[in-house]
Image (tube, rainbow, N blue to C red; front, side, top):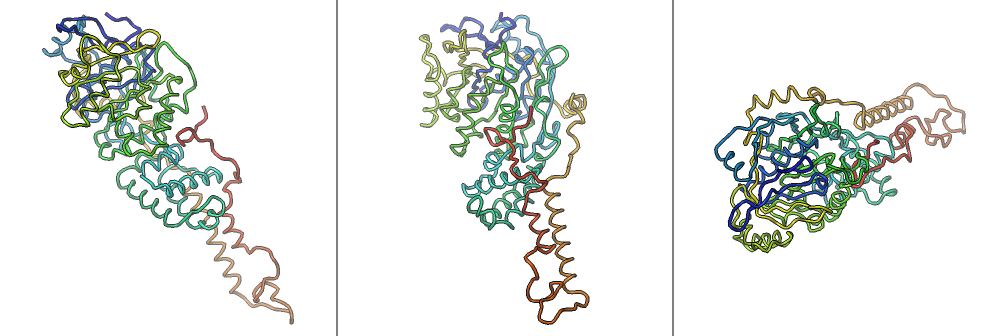
Length: 507
């Protein structure tokens, strides 16, 4: 059997279908990323489950999305069913022990787990533009908005802060166009309408405070096991762009916050990106380039990223090249594109002379996969036809009562339940606008009220004539101009943003 430096994946088979050897993922190469692919119903979720179990037992925290609810069973003790016991015997998993794993449930909507929030400043203009599917011109306006917020000290915490800032930008369009380029009211209006659509789709639940602390998804238990953070994504998948943008934001936050650690004996965190094709569908080239850059560099932060998807063609070639540990379940090859996917998947493996890889991919049974993990010195192992081991936790979803009990006993219970709405851009701009309006009303009252005396041949001493007596500003003019000046005397103090445009928070 395997030792404590690896995760047992399953057992490879000889051409005559007899036992060959144990297939394992070496923990020291767990941060070299990975790929789990296969058609629906071929066993991808179980492969994800056993990998998460293995990392947790090794003391590595895990974050993964639960698309169908099946992965929630990892929180409960497994049961000895005939087909599971038979598979354990086939792969020589002895003893086959059942476990329940430390799980923290999360949910962007706060219904099936603890709420997850991020501020709009942390999300950044690039990811927000991707989420809102903005045009190039509208994305330019969004970048200008964040630049102004950074320069003028306006906190962008939730969607109403961004709405207030955009309204302010529309009023100052002429002034800002002279400084930053063309800022048109129609572009601002289009962004505002898109924000309303996002709000109606439930995205407002995600933006705000308290924002997720990265430390809360990197917890370990007292017995040394890594906590498994499971994101309830069944409802979230109704808005796939929000799902993909959120996971990309989380990956960028990990990249920005974690220090460089180089190669460790095991990862500090493993991140599973299920339905990974949603990240790259219709994504602009600049975003794909930055994702590739994050995937390439985050390894040195001790983070392993594992993409789970149906088709290897879903992953851009530059990203695919970064994924060292691979589990390929069966693919169907009925259409030309599917046939191309089979060939692509076969060509990414180190060939095995005992069988034809492309043919084997179309013949794999449920729970069987082609496996190639990194061996000593980080060299990919020869691909092996492998029976995947059975999970130690429950196979299938948990009940609502079981979920509520786990949430109530969670180590982060109560920390994210209540929304915090502190003073930010919305309140500051609202206050400034009111002050300007009050000052304008007061000035108008002074102009229109009371009797005035004048000296013949001279202008009105108090400014009620046709010309002003000096070049000094009126109270109203000064107040109005204060709105467009830096708030809090913070001109020139730009906030540092990271590789994906998100706020680079201080460590």
